[in-house]
Image (cartoon, rainbow, N blue to C red; front, top):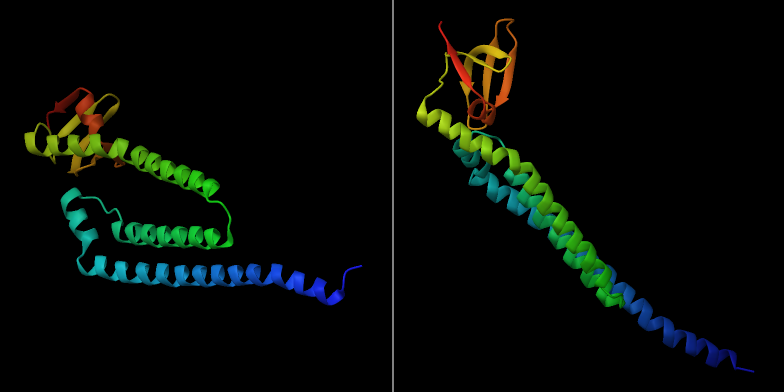
Length: 185
């Protein structure tokens, strides 16, 4: 029969390194949380001071919210790195987390690609419409079933006021891909 004191010492030998690794992992997580929030606040402040959103809006004519996106992305990357470091300290293999990270990166890239797939052609069509001047603000037009007066042409979309007084927002590619008939005023 085992001596209770020896049994206690054996359990202590097993638990001490476990608690130490757990404590170090928690400290790593806390440091990651603090650094992530700090990076988010500093980066948000820097991007607001250089007015990145205003610069992008001036160039593209579209309000995107880059400040928030970039700051939040950096924050979550820092969180993720510190979570992986804490799990490594606990001795948990990171293969599953590497697969999850790859999936997340793939999902983000897919989301970005899908979100800009319509933006880029409309932006190019907007530049074409504004530079070539085939249609301009004040022109009365008919495209397919849409008839009205152009009241604004931005880089991405055009506003058309119909006879009924409705305002239609049509993508610029709609005007470049379809036959546009200019009507007499």
